[in-house]
Length: 239
Image (cartoon, rainbow, N blue to C red; front, side, top):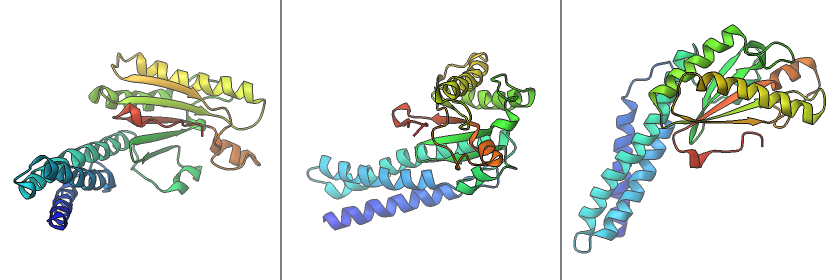
């Protein structure tokens, strides 16, 4: 009987993840890994809960629990996929989890998805003048597009982190990186958002590449925005 319960709950997960594949995305990226993972986990969890809660009808309880769990888990995963595609579309790009995307100097914006968040990486060259935390006009336009997404999803938490290269002291770069992250946060907050917004200055911690050449240092200078539906899932962006 236990094997039947597991088989049924797995089948339900596959069914719901298959349904998620039929949902359209707003940019060419058609990935719905979060939705499939959420459906599978939700279905299995729901099946076990359902089986345990029905003393005389364990099989029926497993089926009902599996359906409910898949719906909830898949819904959470699909929401994250949808949000990633929406912000990528607004910023004129696609969603890419290719780690090489962040190393391409021609890509000034990279939108990617983690298990629990959407990450937007803004290259320093399009964000700030040299050694400044004053947002450039083009950067303001991009940040305001992020604000539009946040206003649509007030439950989202935004974590903004600034990164520098290794020229100068750690303390100086800490201050500069924090100031740049704060400039982005201030512009977001000026739009009257209800979202929780946090800032972090990472100095020259967590470089994308070694700080050996000017080209490499330019890649390391950036601002990253992490968007979470569940703030308890937040990571430390500096490590």
